[in-house]
Image 1 (tube, rainbow, N blue to C red):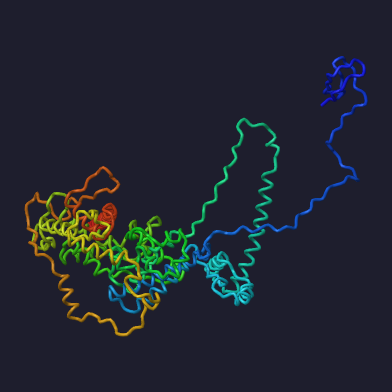
Image 2 (cartoon, rainbow, N blue to C red):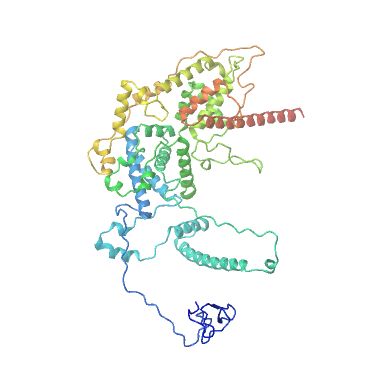
Amino acid sequence: MAPRRKCHVCGSKQWHKEPTSGIVTCSEGHVLQNYRTETHEVTELGPHAVRKRTLKSGRKKKERQSKADPKLYHGERARFHYFQCLQVLFRMQISALIRLWELPPEFELICRDIWALNLALLPNPPTPEPLLHALDGSEQDHASKASSSPRPSPEADEQNEREERADGSDADQSSSSSGSSSVSESDDEELEELMRENSETPSDDDDEPTSTPRPRPTARRPRKRRTFGHYDTPASTVSCLVVACWTLRLPVMYVDFVRSVESYELPYLDPLRLLPESMTSHLRKHTVQALSPHHPPSPLYLHQLASRLARLMYSTYDIYTPEMNAAPILWKSVRCLHGNPLIYVLTKRLARLVSIPLTLHRSLAPALVRTKKRDPTFHKQDSAVPEVALVSAVIVVMKMAYGLDGSPRHPQNAEDPACALPVLSELIRAIRNAEETREAAVSPMSTEHHSSVLDMDDQMLDDYLQFCEKALLPREDRMPARNVTTTNFPLPENPVPRPTDSERVGSAQADADYPGMNANTIDDSADALRPGQKYPVYNTQDILGTVPEDLELVVARAASWAGVDEDYILGVVERFERRVLRWWENVKRKERHARSSASE
C-alpha cells in the first residue's frame, strides 16, 4: 500500500501505483522519489544459498489403544477355529447316527478319513494353527527359532501338487521346479511391465487428432475375499456323512438326513448351544452366523456337495466311491407309489435299458460307448439325485402301463405283463389316501408344516413343548458338563445288539405287504388302447402347459418322498422317456435292416 504522506510538490495525499512500471505517483502526476519495489520470488538459487534444516521431534507419540475384545479370533486363526468347531460338530453327528441307525464301528473311521480328505480338497484349505498362540510365554522364543526355517506357502504347495500330477516327478524335483517357476514368474512380471510401459508411450498415430476420443477402461473394484466359502458351510459335514454311508453301501437317502436334522436328532440347527464355552467365547459375529444355519440343507444342495467331494476324491487321490445300494432304494420308491413286485422288475429292466447311473457323480460311472465321433460320453440328467432317478424310472413304467393321461389302457391277452398290475382307479385311490395321511401326520416342527400354535390341540401343544425342551434348551440344562470328545466317543463297554434273523425276516415281511388290489382287466376290442400305445411325452419347458390329474398326483407323491420339487421330477422323467424313444427307434431301424437283408 502507498505511504500516506503529502507530496513535497503539491501536497496531495492521493497516491497510486502504475501496474506496468511500478512507479508511485500522486493525483497530480508527481513521482515519489526514493521508492523501490522488491519481490520475494526466487527462480534460481546460488551456490551460497542458506537452507533451513527441519529437525524431528524426539517425543514419542502415544500408541492408540485398541478397544477390540482380546478373546475374539480374527484372520487365519479365526478360520482355523471355525473348522475346529465344525470338526466337533461332525463328531457329534457321527455319534448321533451310530446311535440312531445302529451303524457299525467302522463308520466312525471312514467318516474321519473322509473329513480329512474334504479339508484337503477345499479351494482354500485351512492353514495350520499358529503355534505362537498355543504356546506359553516361556516357549515362544523356542517356537520363533523353530518357525524361522523356510516354510512353503499354500500357493506353492498347490503349484507343486499340480506339477507332480502333470510330470510325475518326486518331491525333490517338485521343490526344484517350484524354485525355477518362481524365477520364471518374476521374469515374466518384469517383461509384462516393460511391455505395458512400451504400449503406453505415445506413437505417431497418437499425435493426429481423432474425432472420437478413446474411452479409458474403468478399473474393476477388487472383489472382497470371503472368509468362508461355498464348500465351508456346516452342510459339508452332512455331505461327508453321505459319502461315508455310500462307502459302506448303506441304503440311505438325502431326505433321511434332512428329517433327522428337522427332528434335532442329528446336530445341525443351532449347534452353538452344544459346543463348550471355551470354544464359543472366541467366535466373532461373522463366525457365529456361519455356524448357525436357519434351515436344514435341501437334498439337492447335499447332492451337490457330496457329488463334488466324490468326484475330487477320485480324480485327485484315486479313491472310488461305490455305487448306491440300489435294490432297497428301488423297492422303497416302488412302495412309495404303491406298486407291486412286477413294477419293481420292470423298473430294473428299464433302468438297465436307459443306462441310469447309480453313482454320486457321472465321472465315477463308465462312459457311454461311442459309435460315432460326435456321440456324447454321458447323457443329460446323469448327475441327478440317484433316488430321484429311480423313482422317475418307476413313473415311466407306470406311464407305459397306465398312460396316466385320462385314457385307460387294457392288455389284449393274458400273456401281457400288464395283467398282473393293479387297477388304475384303485392305485390312484391308494396313492391319494397315502398322501393325505402323510400330510395329516406331518410333525408341527417340520418345515412342511405351516400351521400356527393357535391351531394346535392339547396333545399337539404337549408334543411341541417337549420338542422345545430338546431343541432350544442349552446343553448344560440337559446333561452334566463333560468333555466333548469323551461324551461323544466313550470307551466301548458292551457291544450294540444287532437284530436277529427272525427280526430281519419279520421286518422284510412287513415291508413286502401291500394293499390288495384287483388285477388289470383284459380288453380285446380293436379300438382299445394297449399299454405303451400313444405314449405322451410332456415338455417341461412349456410353462403354460398342464399335466393330467393322475400324473400330477403320482409326481407330487414322488416329489414329497424324495424331498425335491415336482418340476425336478418331471425334468428327469422327460429325459428318461426320450432315451426310451431313441432306443425304440434304433430297435425298429435294426429290424427293418434285418428284413431288407433277408429279402435280398
